[in-house]
Image (cartoon, rainbow, N blue to C red):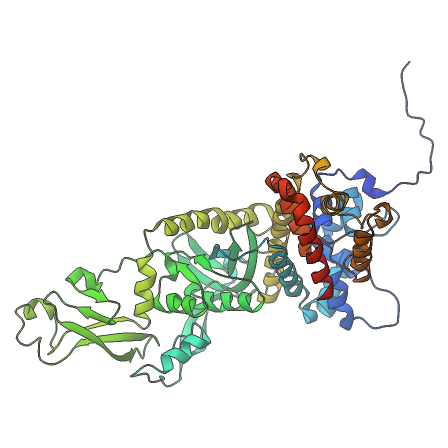
Amino acid sequence: MMGRQSGQLSMVVMDLSELIPDDHLLRRISRVISFDFIYELLEPYYPPNGRPSVDPVSMFKMLLVGYLYGIKSERRLVQEVQLNIAYRWFCGFELSDRIPDHSTFSKTRQRKWNESQLFQSVFREIVRRCVKSGLVDGKELAADGTYLPANVSRDSWVETEVEAELSMQSYLDCLDEELSKQPGFKKPPVKTVKKRRITSKTDPDSGCINHGKKSGIGYLMETTVDCKCGIITGVDVYPANEKESLLVLRHLERQIKNGVPMKNIVLDRGYDTGAVHRGLELLGITGYIPAIQFSNSPEKYGFSYLPKEDAFSCPEGVRLVYQRLNCSQTTGKYLRCYQVQGDACRTCKRQSDCFKQTGIRRRILGSSCYPAFYRGHERIGSDTYWHMMRLRKIWAEGSFAVLKREHCLSKVRKRGISAVTEECLLSVMALNLKRIAKAILLFLSKTKNMDWRLFSPVHILFCQQVLNSTHLVRIRRFQPQLFHRLFELFVSKGKYHRKSADFFLMAPIHFDVCVHVMYPSFSDHWNSSMLRITLRILVSLTR
């Protein structure tokens, strides 16, 4: 008998979450993080009375969905959320709920989000939680910049004349303070000069770049990636004509203030300046940077640097000692002057080869931070150096490729540096959430094949809670009074007060238990370690 749809209307009561597969990306993201902290961030910008607004968390999730799935247009995003059940469920809308209009995003962005710097705050909060949970450890990082073409026409390009203040190049405040104490330091007088700059009439904040394959009007996005799980820990946006080496130190300093640990970092050849090497040392970071091959390096003429003495030695064995800093009035760059003492050069047999110009003694001008520059070059060629360079190709260049291919950053759509910054932050947050969900669920999936009979009920409770990311299992099922009291203390301390647990609020004991589950060799000492774990719980509760 042939089946045929009856066409009758029916009333169905269902939960939208039942329709979402367990391995769906949005379900995986909702398991590992809760965005309820956005309410606290935006509370000062909403009045206590009046008509309720559209849920800001739902609107923020809608924007994330757009960048997760490469939906560039907000008009199309509204249509997709209205039709796609997974998008509706993730954003918190029921089937009968009306989806906010696309104009609501523009008004909310102008009145609430820009003033509160919502996107920067959410990005920093997610990074802080990654640090707290151990997904970001700072042992191996990669920083780099990428060019983003602006959304302008070639016909809108104009050459303008702007007034610029000519002063010394500033990389980092503490580095400027250190240089000011060097002998011979003289702060150059501030001069105002006129420079010609190419920009666009439709987007004056953008800048022009002409560097190899990178040419055009656009922006520069500077990012830092932690190589453990690929989490991007810092994002800054500048006009494309800015120099990356001048920006990277303050870019890293802001992340350190946000609580991101940094131990080793790899950069490309464009950052190979003495100021960057010294700035990384002042920030407590070990840098791995390829060397620029200078055509007139001192080593080419037979001079060698003596790091213990901070001096150069000429082929005849005469020392060139550090004298003072020289400042270039045209560029604002400081150079370290090494010079021969006395009249040793007058009687030297190499004088005709050594001096190409008139002079009485040989001198060498190097970077203002040449000792740090030399120490950075000594690391080149080591096993750690090559390992860091491989990580840079994977995580720095790889992240840029994914952002541009899958997350709407092949070309910026908005205009103005604040709007482009919002676009970059949302794109980076989308990539971070994918990597967070993958890292956590990959970690937890390793526990599924374990023999749970080896573990006591309390370990099963903890591990099941982590695996399922659901509310705390009812504690009254467990007979031991000690653990019953511990669970009551956990609940009373507010560790889990939401319907869906937030992985990043997990207490250290959960990680301890998962480590034991992942490494069965610890099961031989399971009984002896029970007391230690119990004591850890009690200590964490009394803090």
